Amino acid sequence: MELAYPPFEMIDPQGGPAGVSVDLALALGKSLGEEVQIVNLPFDGLIPSLQTHKIDLIISSMTATPERAKSIAFSDPYLTTGLCLLVGKNSPVQSVADADQPGRTIVVKQGTTGHIYATDHIKNAHLLVVDKEDACVLEVAQGKADAFIYDQISTYQNWQRNQATTRPLLKPFQQESWAVGLRLDDAALLAKVNNFLKEYKAQGGFERLGDKYLKDQKEAFRKLGYPFYF
Image 1: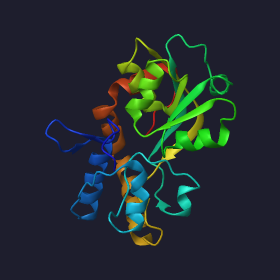
Image 2: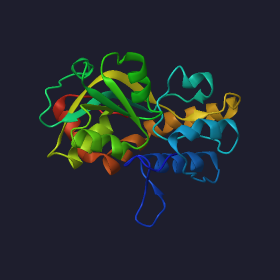
Image 3: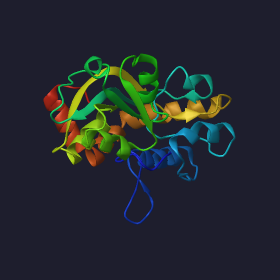
């Protein structure tokens, strides 16, 4: 995983890995009777590292896309979210169609599904690709970009941290599912992971993760009438 996506993947004050995905990985390891080693890698290096056997699993808020599924296997989905927008506080932009206009700039994080969506669908606006989430948010906060395409959870959090300069458009314009990534030839492990995910959900594991790490977001999304992720 890339430990740069709180509260899912992050580094705690003691310098260790923490977050939803870390707890999920440890619970999976316990279920399998295996010791877990968390390896912190850049997001765009996760699939190559899996393919070259440097890691065995990807649990890093990764969206299961048809393109990625050509090179790796995915577990059953464990979370549903969607792409939405972070825009400037006083911006007239109300939708992705509004943002995709001549003279406007849309920023995306390299290698994310927001980047993939923008490459396929943004036809009129200037597309700015950067490698860090914080840098994308800063582009919008400083008025250099009109919109940042990212997932709902992160967009909500980035707005919370930048309420004076940004505004979230949380209604998703593309639904997505996150899943665990595995090598294509690892069918036995895939079956074990899917069985774990089913049992973990049935035992309330995901509900507990939501309460532990995403309590404010759960309440906010309930008020907005959007379904919560797990």
